[in-house]
Image (cartoon, rainbow, N blue to C red; front, side, top):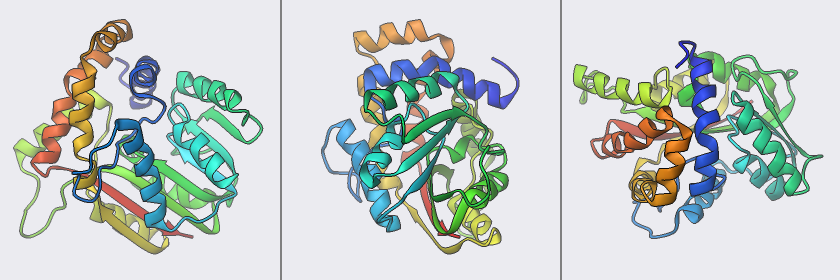
Length: 282
């Protein structure tokens, strides 16, 4: 695997995105199983519900120009374009994902309104004040500089526009819980290695960054309970014959990620992995 993090991320998603779509569909993010995580629903329904619940939580009623940061193969991009009758730009480090996003946009007859390109979220190819809604669904954990990432989102956001992110976090550091232990750091390091993450931070740390960047009306929420069942459901479906054949074809990094799904499941159970939401306006 390449030593450069961006190359690692690119190669990981170039190799794994086709299999994910084949087995699990176009949405490459958690599902939502109700506030307590006990609602029973199929995986796709849960993933759509997560999008809708996050939008409702943030109060996003309309949007005209949308940026999808870390767009995957375009699941959220196309969904948001249709929901809001909006123009959407999706960016990803993966040429395979961008290509598949363009194919899916054409299949949906949305190619004039939804575009995909390979771009770095820390140096976006957009003018200041370009979008009235910036959406980041589980991409913040991949960012090697969280402050610069959020600063770029702020830069391209129009005055009055909304920034909304959902991201993997670690537990908050409080006087009651203390700093991360060496064992917790080692556990997180294995997740970082397998899923090409530089590091994750706590939701309160994201809150501080947002306020320092002058985001207004900043709100945060921890939805860990609502999304926790997702990993066990993915584990249950990962080892059917179709998935196993796809894993073999996808290569070792994808196989290792599949074999390590339990790291995330157990991380949620022990309270070390958290699922954070943040919304702010410019």
